[in-house]
Length: 158
Image (cartoon, rainbow, N blue to C red; front, side, top):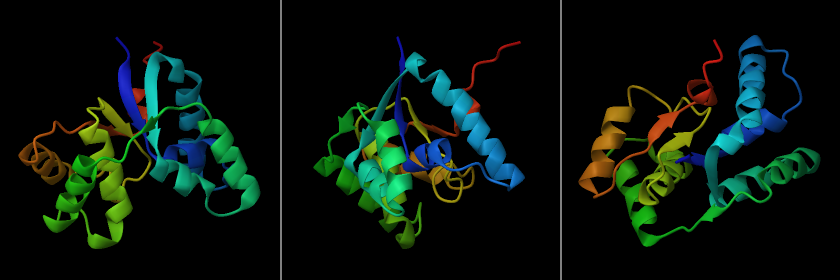
């Protein structure tokens, strides 16, 4: 059975961005391309929020992001997801300025995703925030997804 993966916008941004001169960003971009090449081993899902974020900014870059997302199934924004997103902010798992990040987590949790894949290590894939996020998800009756970067999902080829 394939793992069900919620794909957060930063992954697509790294996938489609022009090559970076910053070594860390360049490494994330290469890792993302390697992971993307094996994406068929997962069931990928996105949300309208991902599409909205991907469509923002430079028109050429947005078109590249949207093309990469073409055909990926959308998760519905439910009242459960909205409520959980609010709870993540209200109960201080994430700062109020990170409402969209909270909603990404909530969508993945409310739809029972196995993982949420992101390069956003400020508010989403953040080890200091993860215990609080998981606790709030469970207190709201849902199992949290494993929140990770594409690097953590690469297959061991040794």
